[in-house]
Length: 309
Ligand SMILES: NC(=O)c1ccc[n+]([C@@H]2O[C@H](COP(=O)([O-])OP(=O)(O)OC[C@H]3O[C@@H](n4cnc5c(N)ncnc54)[C@H](O)[C@@H]3O)[C@@H](O)[C@H]2O)c1
Image (cartoon, rainbow, N blue to C red; front, side, top):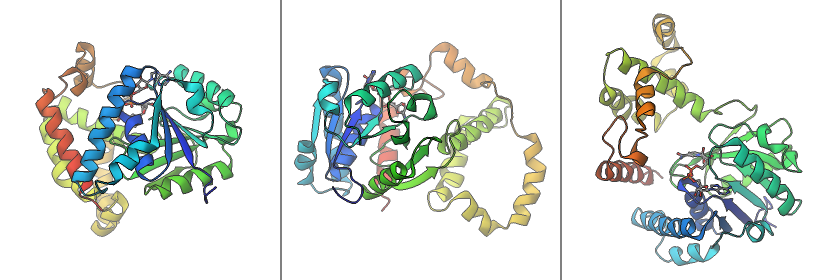
């Protein structure tokens, strides 16, 4: 066993997130068992892994001779019993549905060795909602990756009040060992840190659009060319430490009372949802997000992320 006691990992769910999580862990030299419900889905996952590895080679993140080694470390199968038999860590990346997660954590508890740590990549579901369904709530936590998981260098680790310090320390050391930054979320809360920040920004962005202050391109420009550009290098506290908190305090007093604060889904988003316009996956959202649009934005994001050290 190495310093964090993890040698073999199972990734359960090989979709958008699962295939990327599997490829990154294998690229760091670990054995990965990748499971999904059918061989057809696993076939798509294998193609996505090939594509993702090629992008890592193109951007100089890995060497070309690492590709076949990485692929040889990933064992794909639709046999859950075999995929869980001998792993030290499970990362669940199945759909965001609490009953699917409860059912899976029950199976993990029954099928994994007793030392195995059980993690979910859920975006928002608190670990206590499914930890009790396993037979080891002290070994359950959230490892929340962001998309694309092999390029965004951050994982949120969220503990429930049952998660042991030993589990947290092993999980943190493992994620740091594969080259990620870690934020430990000490108290479980809906949306953790990343999605609380992003939904707060989205709520205000939709308010600006709904009230005709700007349009979606205006909001996206504000983020792409100003706030987001600075935030790629320094956090909000660092940036505003430079601006001066007296100035920020004055702006806060002026602006905060006027900010959007209603819990309902704002009208521009509700209209989209009612029409089934879910963005790239349905070819239309706020943008006309057809295949060309989707490819060009995905490539822009991947190139930008890969250019960071
Ligand atoms: N999409 C994102 O940007 C993002 C970011 C961070 C976290 N997440 C979270 O990651 C998880 C997966 O999201 P995704 O975007 O990869 O979804 P996805 O739909 O692309 O992938 C989910 C996969 O789970 C498989 N699956 C369905 N039922 C299953 C079961 N019972 N057991 C195992 N696998 C099953 C599906 O076949 C599919 O391949 C969700 O909890 C989501 O909230 C998503």
